[in-house]
Amino acid sequence: MTDNALPQPCPPDDLPFRTSGTLVERMGMEFLELGSERTVARMPVAGNTQPYGLLHGGASAALAETVGSVAAALHAGADRIAVGVELNATHHRAVRAGWVTGVALPLALGASIASYEIVISDDEGYRVCTARLTCMLRDRPPAR
Image 1: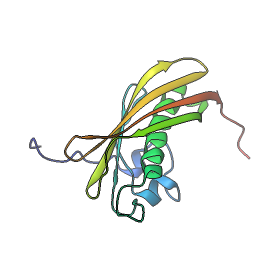
Image 2: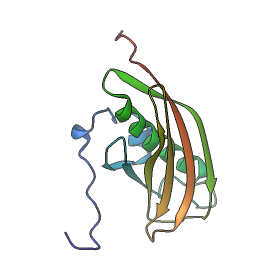
Image 3: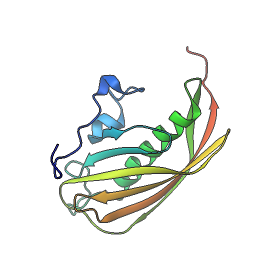
Image 4: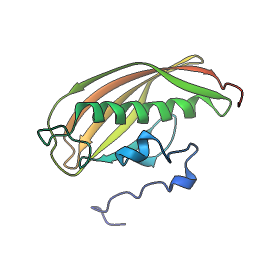
């Protein structure tokens, strides 16, 4: 791999969750790293813009909540789920093209709560958005 080669996304069949038919698929999100200590995903700007042609703030929030929730779910373990209870996001700069990448790093990992900081950057490495997500960790409900 050369220094400027893009990381390859995790194949959907290798992910520990379903993406088909979800917002992840609809928004074109691709996971690059998975772990409770660091989860990384990217999303194209194209198709996720507001009427002025800029990346929609809600799209950044959706990427942040997705990346943080996946990290929290991995922390929770196979018999538990992570449910977002609070998300805040500060939008720092506009993006018109390319990809944005979200990196979730833990702030606090407990038995019932997990909080993550998610930094979203553009292709040049500029910070586009900073978000914080708190998830409640619960037992997985019985299958219906």
